[in-house]
Image 1: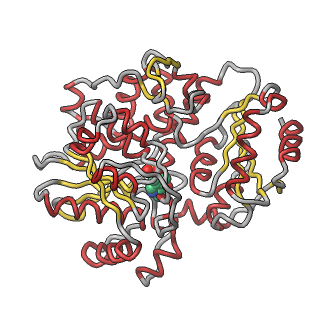
Image 2: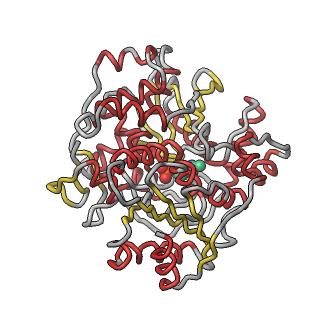
Length: 433
Ligand SMILES: *Cc1c(COP(=O)(O)O)cnc(C)c1O
């Protein structure tokens, strides 16, 4: 499979280049030149396939020219080793639980698949690969867990000291082995500036093989299409049109759904669900895209004012507003509405949803007001215990913490203190690798 840039349709990059570069030089985003349709037999017999087999069929269809089948099977089986169950609330409403991976959020799918794919392309290299990531909390945990003990790959995660939650900090600092956490005496922007500078510094990136693992890497998007098929398999059979409601920030998850539709999955409609950071719903309503600084909300993993994957969405619709509107509706909700929805879901269905999923639920209900008889699947992007303080105070009850999280909170923290001075970071890198 070849990739072009959303800023230059004539550019061509291989899968390996697209994955290791992350971004094309022209600062666009990589997109597949072609998204081939899956066979009708596969699409009509999804229920005959396990989740891993579905993931295998999709990956083979996309990447068979780049990676041998045997290796694709290994990548998929190692990366996708946890389920994505669709829990029924009522006849028209399902919650797709995407939090059964190690970091309890859907980002595990992308991070684990990317780690395995990078390890495959890296296996014959003599020098180890060093991945630099700046995190404000959320992505870092999935990347750390995804790359943990991956042969030939070292991960350095920079996070702002005192500015991530205690649990997020544990996710970055407790693993050890090939994961090193740098605790930076500064802000997230300082962390990002250090990483950016290292990438452009020849004295660093010539002796050290550097790569990034940011959320716009195409290797993270591909596996996020798997669970749309897996959900469809579980809810189909009622003969109703199926719509997906996607709690969104950078719109990677929604873009992966659009790719699943291109591969032939008969999704009737997409619902872009946001908090107060509603530039995409606004675009879908008015045709005007106005990125702006993000606002802080309860569903903070979606606090994005300039969604990076919007360029990919535009690309898929040839920048035509009317075409995009035909397939996607968008709604934004306040924190007050989100809290109410969390309480309502608990009372009506005895289901505990996290603030991000609650935004998705609200958007689905809004859509169903004008589209009765549509079966909706809400993507539940994180486990409620990731936001335990908020969820417990909103629902006024204690909630259960999965064991894999409990284990982490008792683990020891290991971090390296780092100033915001680039010279310090540089000499640490050169000494360490
Ligand atoms: C990252 C994240 C989102 C937003 O996903 P995008 O693909 O960036 O739209 C939503 N919910 C949670 C819990 C997240 O971590």
